[in-house]
Amino acid sequence: MDEIERESMEYDVVIVGAGPAGLSAAIHLKQLNADLEVVVLEKGSEVGAHILSGAVLDPCGLDALIPDWKDKGAPIQTEVKSDRFLVLGQKTSIRLPNFLMPPLMSNHGMYIVSMGNVCRWMAEQAEALGVEIFPGMACSELVYGEDGALIGVVAGEFGKNADGSPGASYEPGMILYGKYTFLSEGVRGSLTKQVIAKYELDSDSDVPKFGLGMKEIWEVKPENHSEGQVTHTMGWPLGWKAGGGSFMYHLENNQVYVGYIVDLNYKNPHLYPYMEFQRWKHHPAIAKVLEGGKRVAYGARAVTKGGFQSIPKTVFPGGALLGCAAGLVNLPRIKGNHNAMLSGMGAAKAAQKAIKDGRSGDALADYDADLRSGPVGKDLKKVRNVAPLTGRLGPLGGLALGGFDMWFATIFGVNPFGTLKHGKSDAASTGKSSDYPVLEYPKPDGVLSFDRLTNVSFSATNHAEEQPCHLQLADPSVPVEVNLPNFAEPAQRYCPAGVYEILRDDDGSNPRFQINAQNCVHCKTCDIKDPSQNINWVTPQGGEGPNYPNM
Ligand SMILES: Cc1cc2nc3c(=O)[nH]c(=O)nc-3n(C[C@H](O)[C@H](O)[C@H](O)COP(=O)(O)OP(=O)(O)OC[C@H]3O[C@@H](n4cnc5c(N)ncnc54)[C@H](O)[C@@H]3O)c2cc1C
Image 1 (cartoon, rainbow, N blue to C red):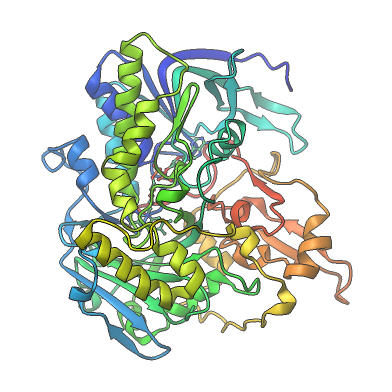
Image 2 (tube, protein in one colour):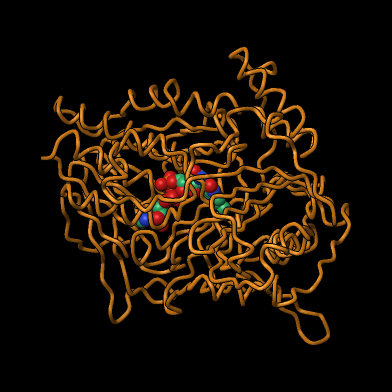
């Protein structure tokens, strides 16, 4: 396969991923210099197909990028009207008074949006400025120059047989060359992982940390709907044994986004994040909103939560990491879209200046420095100890001491604990199955809660069967010989799409690991949480995966 002849195209900037980060970079490049040639490549079947956020949008990023977004018809209508934080027991709920929450947690002035729709609209704005956008084009390889700098990507390779050989309808894809290549693949990008390793971009940063976010869209009865209401919860059903919590956002048209995030540093490998989410919907405070309604869509995606100390170096010869490829989510606010947009603008500014100065293929040092010292760094710095405190002390300690740390930083401008370290990676945090109790989960009732495969059908996920498996095992014997005896093979439970199964003969003997790659919703949890770090998520051919409507 090394000898493949490919056509090529040359651009000033090649952008991988049409999320808020990549699209902001594209728009800002053209705003700064309309003559720049800019291309955006997106693996989803259309822009927005793979976008999954809550989402409460802090408009500060969009205000900077397109100040007249309201006049330009941005699909951003539902302003937050009320903001509640509940601590749940099994049947109880206690509302924390808003005055106890650090002001940075307030959602006043924010909007409840479909980020998928916002990205579709941003793509229209970008195209109007002359950006070329190619959806359905997965970027599968990085292309390096002789001096070791990144000079482009391979995109649009289709039609390989399962064994990797070219099939009857094989298309080799193209090489897209850029003076600079921006990786805006979102959390745990498959190409991002490669450049982080190649250029040792994480040598001075703390370990990256993640959560698994699962989300459903519900249409609820009008009397249960409260447009503009934002609710976050902690506590039941995860309790205080693992970090995580929920969100419920009432947008327009009687629709409600409900979702649950489980921190992936949980220890008990018997934990079943998807079932925690399903169980949560049966809490009286949640069920009373959903009862009589219907679930119309489901999806899942990992979310970065390492914050400031986990940001790797974001620049390397020929390219830069943007948005969640660099891990820019503000964890306690559960917000990353504004930082994704601001980082896209920052990278665009640095690349435009470099190109104007006749440079190419070098590291955009200005971008990295501005990211850390500018609004994105300031946003993340204040909250940098919440994740490490939660990791050490559990969610209750994290809530109390993390709250104190954020209040102190707000009032005095410094964090009393300095910068705490995260400790182990999420994979290494997984404990031995024999050391933890097996957890029992109630069967979904099919009304408020659903089994995984039924829910996956509500993500409109699709993958051609005839192609190499995009979930690669470094050692195929590990799931059964290492993970099963030591960790009860947690892939069976942490995957929110039921991709991984242990199959056995009727008498329970002969365990085999099965990968149902066609169910994969591209959340990347397996790549993050596998305790043996044996699963490598690579992109399948373009246009596949979920087809989210208005997530
Ligand atoms: C459950 C959940 C709830 C959240 N809630 C909120 C919220 O309420 N508010 C908020 O501000 N933030 C929220 N976030 C965080 C927010 O989603 C991210 O910060 C944001 O999406 C980051 O934007 P991005 O452009 O970096 O990446 P993404 O939005 O993930 O976009 C990356 C794009 O790149 C594409 N891509 C990836 N790899 C390739 C490849 N190799 N080739 C081609 N295309 C590729 C993907 O398909 C995708 O379209 C939430 C996240 C989750 C998971």
